Amino acid sequence: MDKNQLGVQYMQEGNWEEAAKAFNDAIEQNPTDPVAYINFGNVLSAVGDDEKAIKFYQRAIEIDENAAAAYYSIGNVLFSHDLFAEAKHSFEQAMKKGLDSSDTYFMLGLTLLQLDQGKLALPYLQRSVELNENDAEARFQYGLCLAQNELIDEAIIQLEKCIELDPDHSDAYYNLGVSYAFKEDQTQALAMFNKALDIQPDHLLAGHGKKLIEQNF
Image (cartoon, rainbow, N blue to C red; front, top):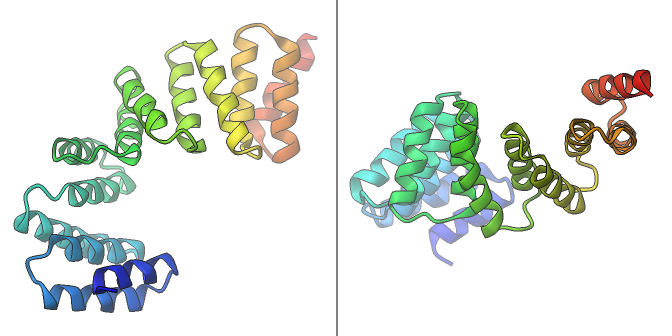
């Protein structure tokens, strides 16, 4: 097993110190391998040293300007610091460099949502779901985005698929309740709010939704 593979294995085990050593060895063995710099950056980001992580990602890009994963990783760091416009640029760069993954589309879609560009976010979230049909969170965010764009029937389909994948997703049940309330199906809305509260009894929004429905019954 080469040092990069060994480091990834340590990362998967949560052994950051050994992972860092393995990636450091990989860089020493091959200083022009961008993958080792990206991997080392991912370790640094995982332990909270984002500033240093970005330097490693940038070094990977200096070595190979088409290192798409480096742009993606920079985007994640920027997103985590609420630098959404900059994150958007990084995710777009990752796509231009060929990173055609569900995660890239998902993160670009989420970033556009944060920038209040819901209509632009829709196709990216849709593509994310197409590339990974079993990602419950992608389904949820796509459903939310559809609902925000008043595509309620389509939103319900995605939210229902989300709870098929993750039956304990209380926020998906809550948003299904809101969607059914919007369609004036009070019985279904109440059932969804109750389900959200069964899973998460302190779900304030679901509790409020339930109260409103019961007052109008």
